[in-house]
Image 1: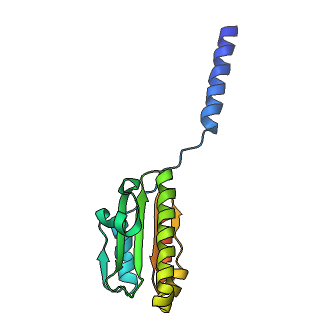
Image 2 (image 1 turned 120 degrees about the vertical axis):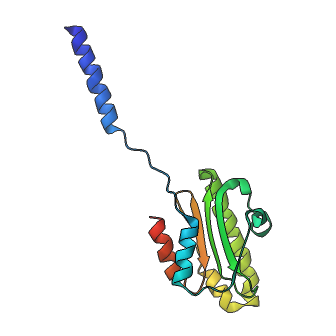
Image 3 (image 1 turned 45 degrees about the vertical axis):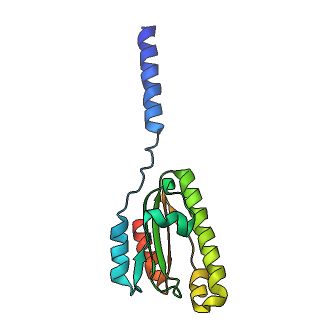
Length: 156
C-alpha cells in the first residue's frame, strides 16, 4: 500500500512539473526576399545595388560567420543615403555584434553626410537599428514609416 502511495505521489509530482513547464519560444523564420518585395511594391525606391555577403566585411566591418542570411540594398548614387538591411544572426551573441556593427556603420555615415548632404543626414539621423528574435534590420529612406510598418508585420 505504501509503495502505491509513493508511486502516486511521484506521478503527481511529475504531472505538476510537466504542467508548469512553459513551451519554449520558437525562433521566427521570415522570408527576407518577401519583405523586400513588399517594400519595393509599397514605396518608390531609388536605383539600388545589392551588397554581396562577401562584401559585408569591407562595407560594414562585420564577420560573415555572425549571420545566416543577409539582404542589403543601397543606393547606386553615392549622394543618396537610402539603404535597406535585413540580417539573420546565427545566435544571440552574433545578434549583439551585428547590431553594434550596424550602429557603428550608421554613425559613420551620419558623420560623412553631415556636411556632405544635409538632407540625407536627416534621413540617417532618424534611422534606428532594430532587432527581433535573431533578426537585425533598418531602413534609410524618406518612406521609413511605411517600411517600418512592413517590418512590423513580419517581426511581431
